Length: 161
Image (cartoon, rainbow, N blue to C red; front, side, top):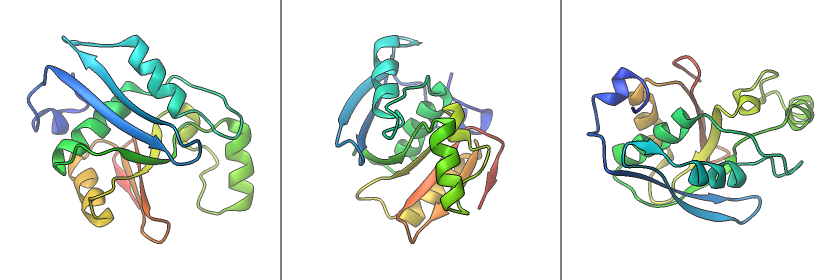
C-alpha cells in the first residue's frame, strides 16, 4: 500500500517500485527495486538504508518504508526517472546534536534521527516544482531550501516551511 489516502488516489499500484539514489557525501549510487509482486524486498531496503546511512558516523538505520513510497510517488508526479541527489538521509543523534549546535536550521528532534526524513534534489526538475509536487502529496512535512538547493520531505504530520 502506498502512503496515505491522498497519495493512494494518484498512482495505480505498479508491478515494481524503483528508486535511484546518489549520495552526494559518499559518492555512492544505487538503483533499487524495493517493492515487487506486492511486497517490499528486504535486500533492496537494506541497500537503500546503507546508501542513506549517516556518512559522518557510518551508522545505518532502518528507514521508514513510507518515505521510499513518498519518493517513488513524488518522482511519478514530476515525470522523472532520474536519480535523487541525497544531501541527508539518516542522522545519528550525535550527528544531529552537532549539526543543531552549529545551525538554527537543524531541528533538535529531527525526523532524520528516526529514519523518517530525507533532504533531496532531483536533477532535471526545478526545485520549486519538486517542492510543489511534494506539497501536493499532503503526506508529510516539506521544507524548502532554495539557497542550499534542496527540499526536505518526511513522513511526519503534514506541514511545510
